[in-house]
Amino acid sequence: MILPLLALAAIQTAPTAPPIEHPPHVIAGGTGAMAGGPMQQMMMDYRACIETHVAATPTTVTAEAGAASVIAACKSQHDALYAQMSTMIASLPADRQEAMKARMAERDAGMAARIAEHIQTARAGSTAPAR
Image (tube, rainbow, N blue to C red):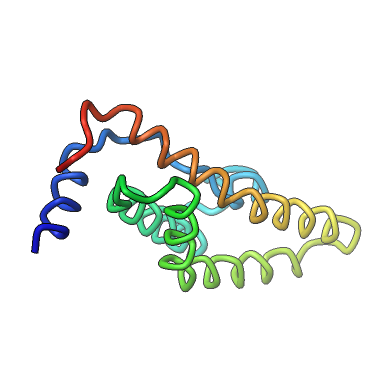
């Protein structure tokens, strides 16, 4: 019973870290390219999932382990977003597809490190760990 209370206290006292940037900003050329579309909603859902799980990451786990947990928890949102991204990339001219696929893979490969940094930033802003 004490562990859920600790997690709740950590969520309430954790500062808000800067949002994680995700591939649609880079690949689609900013939010204007997706305004109102299904990809924008998928991106918002994925970000919300990440933010929720980052905030709930206990201080007893390393930022790297927390990042792995966040990625696993948000896999369905990630997969939906990346399926939509793949569809968008397939509609581009052939000469741009490979560059976009490479950029998307590069962003995805660095996601764990960015989430771990996000967790560390959130923790650094807290005055004391929840007990």
